[in-house]
Length: 90
Image 1 (spheres, rainbow, N blue to C red):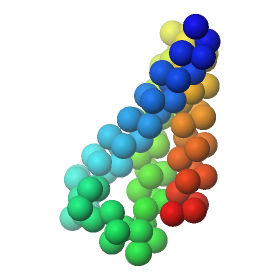
Image 2 (image 1 turned 180 degrees about the horizontal axis):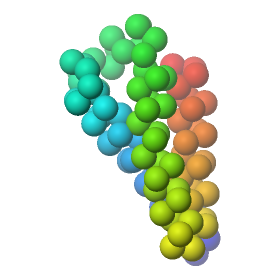
Image 3 (image 1 turned 120 degrees about the vertical axis):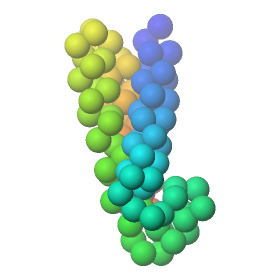
């Protein structure tokens, strides 16, 4: 049960970051996440976009803690850490 909750939280964190990044790019810039991935990477904006997209993870983290879903909240934190590490190497 704990491993599945951790995995569910991990996938929730990944999806929330993707949705947050997409919403930020659609509302605040002229870029699109899918088509302009290489442009964002060459301009050095990819890490910043992913960081702004991860703001949703903070909200989800506190909602999961409020509902006593600690292992799902750990999965969200794990997804955020893994995304931060992978963005450093991209």
